[in-house]
Image 1 (cartoon, rainbow, N blue to C red):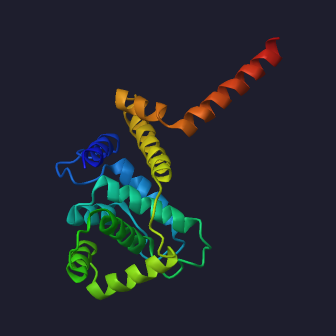
Image 2: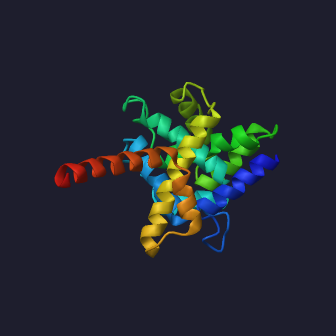
Amino acid sequence: MADHRSFSNRLRKTLYYGEFADASLPSDPVTDVAVEVLNSAVPNKRRRLDRKYAHSVARRAKISPCALMMGLLYAERLRLKPTTSSKDLSSSDVFLISVMVASKYLYDEGEDEEVFNDEWAKAGLRTVRDINKLEREFLDLMDWNLFISPQEFSNFVNKIESQVAVTKGLSRGWLTYSDVETLLNNKKLMESLSALAYDLLNVRDSCFG
């Protein structure tokens, strides 16, 4: 429990939760990342996810940072499936259902299914019947496999944190210590920068050697 609380606090910091008066709302940068992930994962042009709807769902459902990250990872998995798989679902629907399913996986402690889905129907401005149908379709697309290994989750979270850090840094013109720490913790990014530095040194040596 303590580890989960610590990780949630880390995400609230690195994803800039608390940027608005309503501290339950994700920041604009992480919301924009969510919109990009969902719209690339779902080819259907109908009811495309936008920042307004994502914020609306987040405000009503009080989506936790961990549930948001899990939901985005589920959507990323959908992106890797054949494009025909999710052709009947909109990105707005997949956003709503993916974070709902993630919340159930993380926090549901025996709450009545209909009550839980009713709350999410209100959050997404849909009917309970819609939610039940979308949930079944989503789980079928996921092959009912919701398990995420710690390593997979860590890698995905690092990627999203880095995107948010760069976006915030570019918008303000400088990086905070927290942003720099986030980027330094991204192993893949550091490996890419090391490889780039190595290539640049080789170019320099060939030009001036």
